Image: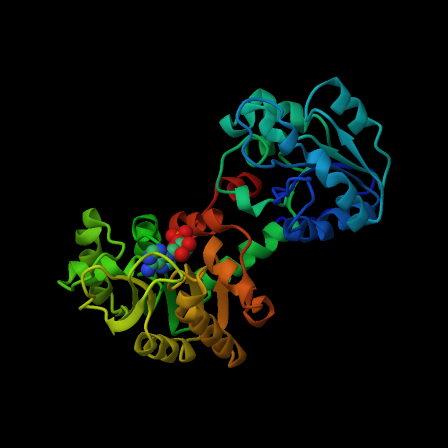
Length: 396
Ligand code: AMP
């Protein structure tokens, strides 16, 4: 892998694509700096080599040109503190000023560019815009895994202007190594746990995984589509009527490929989509009218946990229920804890996709699993297609 460990940055200006898309409160304070701290080892390595760093990122989803609330200038004080060095700021990511500021950088100095998405050419992947960004430095470092599934100017197109000087930063290298470990070097039994709201967003990934896994556990909102497809009574649970056929096909394909498929047998059903709703634990095939399944039940927890305990590789994407509500978090928490137990017993566990990561964070278990991926969409797309535009651009 072409990582920054194989590159000496002495005397070089490195253009580094980072993911500083962090949440800000109304006073522009950073409420979660995980993504910034994740990128600091990459930045420090370049500075320690005697190079200088030009950081570029997007922040939020600006619609048309610059917007105060999406300015990366809000990040500067905290970044400077984390790096323990001053950070200068270019109020436009391209143009004469950015160019002269980049050119003036001395070894050990850091420049942050304004939000790339103030230009629509960024997401359009416009080559001339990518060329302008490329002209700021001598080497390109991609350390933004969360956007590696997009062929944007700064994530993918820019790489072509550095045919011999493009490398992965530590965040990227780590993500790629961990995903490859699961997909290509997995120890068996390999169990995938899929949850979350809908089956529609997960069909492609389940399809891909069926060739690699031994067990497929289905939970969350998508389980009710499987139950209804098999003739169960799901009350007013979340169901995708147009995906009933696909649910049956997944069950059939799993059987044909020798994959054990585990669908919940009981559910915690609620009278409304609310934490304060009346609730009862029922057979998942016989949910009373007017009730909706919002969590897996205790029997399902037990069955799923047993499968997890006996796994050597575990991939978890998506909660088992509406874990944001305390009364319907039990199943998700139980699965997270089962993964922790399996990990302690020697299994390799990768957690990825926004909401299972949020769950792992909620239960403070980040350090008790093998790896938590930072890129939700990017991770899923990597598994689905076997590559990502931003990864390919560095590798080729
Ligand atoms: P996803 O982004 O597809 O992984 O979906 C995550 C969301 O699915 C979370 O916000 C959960 O609250 C929601 N979810 C999980 N289980 C259910 C369920 N049984 N009914 C409705 N929503 C659910």
